[in-house]
Image 1 (cartoon, helix red, strand yellow):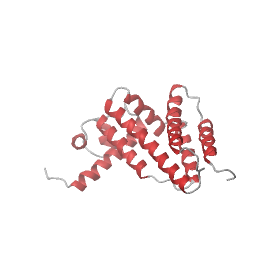
Image 2 (cartoon, rainbow, N blue to C red):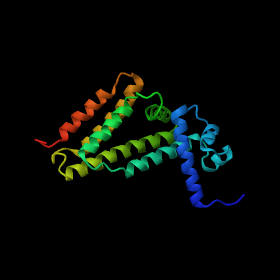
Image 3 (cartoon, rainbow, N blue to C red):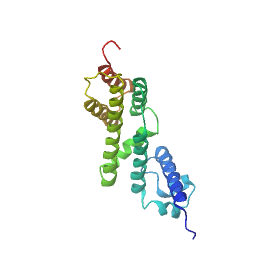
Image 4 (tube, helix red, strand yellow):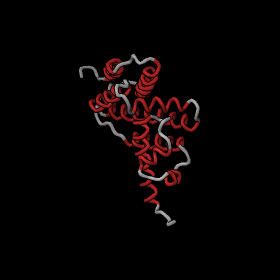
Length: 196
């Protein structure tokens, strides 16, 4: 068998991760087998196992890739932050039949029994908090947020409201988008300089 270049292997890995995310969203974490993920990626099961030993390893890498995107994300204005949180409220309300919300719930469920997934979820939570912290600090430096606003507490609050909404909807699906958005809006209002 010919040796594959590092660039080829990296591209193939991205192809698998992309297919796995789509497969997980469409079929659910438990129903998406390695065989099915391979089919979604257009690869044989052997080719898939060349890159990942099992579905849990694939899931951990998938979460790391999502976090990498979050680490690179830049929110440049207060209005962009409001828009970002509006999208988060929509996603967290679980209004879609299938999609990121439902997949996130399944990932959290998996974290109760899989240490690797639990560590990846903890890292993902920290990545979210870091995104909020970076954003709030930059907006405060730009004068879009009150100078006395505690950005560390704000970043924690936005992160934990997101996690709480996700878990709350899982336990009792009564949390709607408007309720989540109202909490985000109240915190955004606290950030705003007087007279703005």
